[in-house]
Image: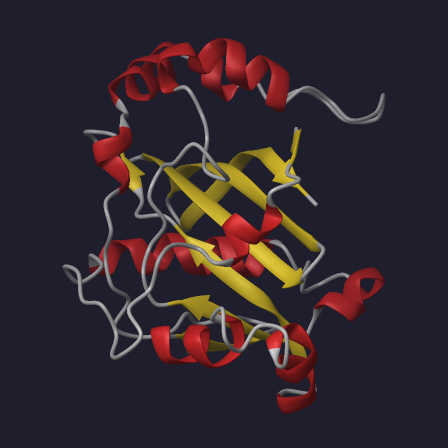
Length: 221
């Protein structure tokens, strides 16, 4: 994983206009199902051990993340080598996911490039099993994190304004295989000025919906 010491650049997400929400093409409806799968995976809703992650307010960024040299950094041309590194077991009790070695996955990964993750606008928030969600807009970004307001507001004011604040989440647009049975999505969550992580998630479609096959942590602070 990569440690990011330029966290402020990710916190700002991208340059934002001061007035009004920047508009991009609407997010395809099918992407919301992927987002729902992901948003319900991280808090471990059925496990009381993770109760501290549950019933939090997650702000979902209203525009999708583009592939960049910063947080969302992954070389799809070298996907096999990248995933052999990022998906290696963290302990002896965990097994390395092997889905990406499958020939169909290799072909899919080789077909993905930066254009697969273009900017889109979310028109609604995400359904979550054990979290509350709301859209994070340009107006909120400017109110809490502009150059003029960050020092006097920032995460301190955000937590005061929302007692159950859990984090600010951002997704990329979803990239799908030709047969729509495989999907890739970038997901990041920032919980305060010095804590956050970004993942590249790999999903497969089953008869009862989407399932996460692997999570590659690209950065952590």
